[in-house]
Length: 100
Image 1 (cartoon, rainbow, N blue to C red):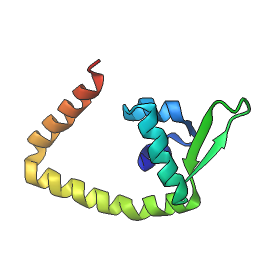
Image 2 (cartoon, rainbow, N blue to C red):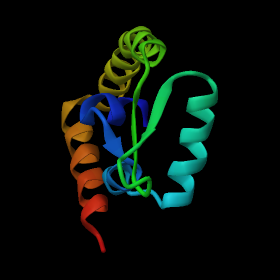
Image 3 (cartoon, one colour):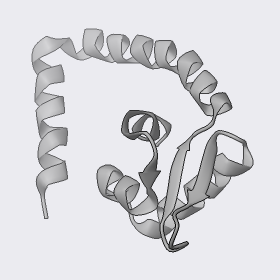
């Protein structure tokens, strides 16, 4: 979720929900936890019905620390599966997101 917010910039809860294929209540619950930890900032739009979420400075710093660890884990998985199986896995995961 943190990576998605980073990549999307200031995003509505609905936009994030669609991007992550998650229901609104899951997004709201998880964002409240991130907000309590100071990792995201939630702001209301003018009409107060739509909320925008973005990473705080602390959230950006934590992400910068986590990305090298994520890359290391990805490299281990790719090494374990091999290039062909890894590509197959990514293709299948992409197909899952297109199923209605």
